[in-house]
Length: 337
Image (cartoon, rainbow, N blue to C red; front, side):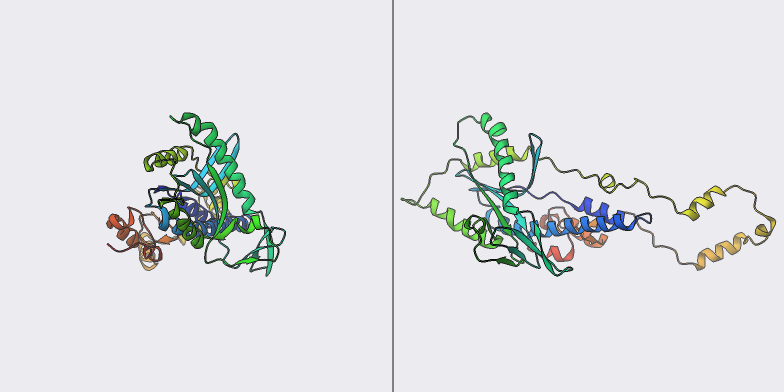
């Protein structure tokens, strides 16, 4: 069962796109904003690809609870968890999703590196396995401090599985001699969902291979929703991060025109001032901007700007798109009704 979907980043993407339109933006801050925008879009694609396989297998399964994009703050430590899977046997999978289209390489000493296409070389990144383990500790602290003491009946502590899921579109390269604990913690998202489905299906079989669940479906849903109550969405102040004023600085020509407003014009200038009829003719001859409502629409999945016509089509078919707007490419992922 799907408990929580990913928070919509369209508002942040739109703000960053608007900041790039500012005329007073220095080159170094423009590059930083473009890098942040690329990071948001890349992360959105990676989490969306992984979430597709998890939702396909588990979103309608009463034995599983699926949580996407869970941010917890416990004792001053924050954990931004990409995906959490909880089953009726009290197994909790803390999943970190990654997408590297040009290649993700794991060295023999367990170091992770991605292929930088611009510099044409591998560059190291922090270990996503260690990151998933840190997230597991924060989640466990929350459960032990806030969830377990409020239960009506005692339950055994859950078993945790911190893993890294790589989008199937990524290249995953292993060097010889990678530690087994690292190799077992990193896998492709489509293979993980399929293997996990076969693994837990055995428990439902009668006989020696079966395992009695510790929770009913209703108790599992209540537990997952109680965890989601502690979700604290990240509020990023991009004006503060990039040290930008809330309002763009006026151009020099505009300031000079504003300063000279109301001064007496010289006679020569007054003689060359066009008559009202001439001004109207010049205004009619010049192209006028098309009237718009000033509202922009963005795809709820990829954050891409879409036209009003495409957005209205989605809004008119709420039974198919759930009241959200999607671009033409993302609309293809929804079955027709």
